[in-house]
Length: 178
Image (cartoon, rainbow, N blue to C red):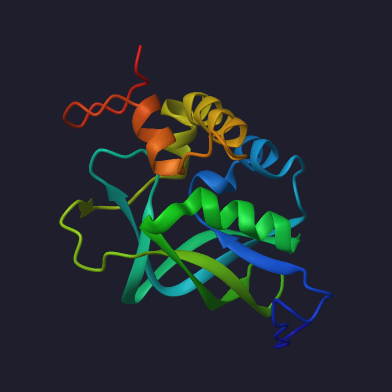
């Protein structure tokens, strides 16, 4: 598959989605989509993954000479893409990017979610997936279950409001509300 680019819509409206944060965790994806799609390890060149003050999930923005490691979820259906769009909320904008697959020299077009506020003063440093898994994944899965339960009207809430009601909003304390 060397050098072959496939547009997300060429496979009967199935999509590729590059994920780089909480969606790299199978447990989170399983709660959202009710399955774990096939995936490949991939790199996104020209972007940086930031931590966000007061949040446990990351953001990416374009930054020259940087790269973000993540996974490409393949075979994402239109309804699943809608769920991911809703989960990412208006904090992110869906973009089509070219990613490099680690297990081959192939490149692939995929959707990804880019932080919508390019000058956000709350972005800092480098977000670490392994640290997130140890410190926050269990609670994030519980929060995601709450989001999925409230996804259908009339209780429909955004992921940000679900997140903010689940996590305390006092300072930088990223622990679940009690």
